[in-house]
Length: 406
Image (cartoon, rainbow, N blue to C red; front, side, top):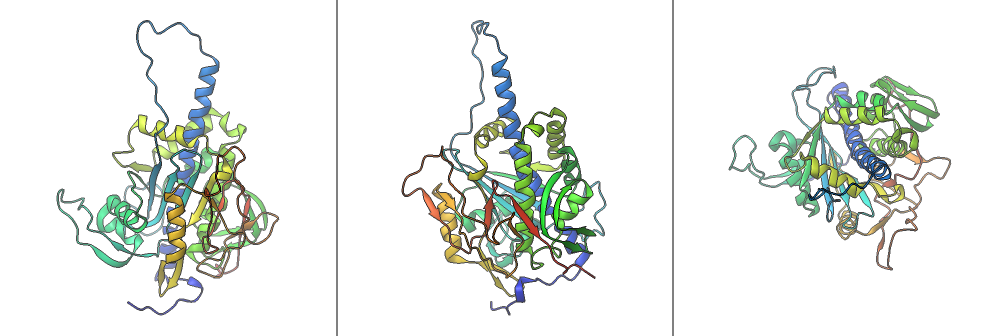
């Protein structure tokens, strides 16, 4: 199928208000990624405190049970839906759809020294395999070709989203979580707000978000508006919005790893409660031992080895298709548990920039491998410049615009 090219990747929206509201789902994936980190950090801290305050009285003849760190690589898919069903908050008129506008694959390396968070754009055209039919156990849905990835949740449920991304990447994904709209305000309140940097003023009348250039602590509804804005950042495309989302995510991860957050039990409990109220877990993940084991695997990963990237794409008509060579380089490196080094000069599928390095050049510098990490001459992979992203250690700023003025 040949489609006319879309200028600057600004994809048409028949209903701007409904479309903007769907962008809220991105925020929830940010929340869940952060919640995974919170769980890992909190568990590591509590375990350390218990160990420091223990007394040896023997086992009394019994064995002491332990929950070990997860053995091997971890692959977890986060799916964000635009559904209004079962939501407590008011998110505008119910469009009646159940789209997976957010699809993020988290990969933790086999040795638990590094992690990759890979976002798949909602408008990416994919082939859908013959997924199990959630409504009719034992039966399969017919495969589909050349459809947008955000239609797969409504077509075949979370399992179909998982199967589609597994087929696209060649990565086995045993764990998945589905999240909806309600948790963003509660989560941002529980952490006490997130401090973000804005390089250029954001003016978005669609979300009623107006932020001047500078540092802002975002909490509650304002945090929600920031995470959902597309028109107000970069070139107005979904891709530059993802980059802006990473500004929030990296700042949130840095905050929850700070002593001020980790020492506040109320905040940690609030985060855990908000996350629990916002997720539906796959049966493979809905197990306390499994979650704690994964948390222990994630806990020791340093910020500079936590890499956030977009799956590389090119504009095609009203959507996107894979940038085949760049995608292969990225996926091969992730599957091989290589240390990812981002290009110092990055260029995405569209012309705009959703974020820049705070106080630095307009491109993200390559991450520096952790001094404690073991590496060989073949361990580090220099990614193509068409792979856009940053590390959690990098302090970046969102680039606003006036495209959202009405």
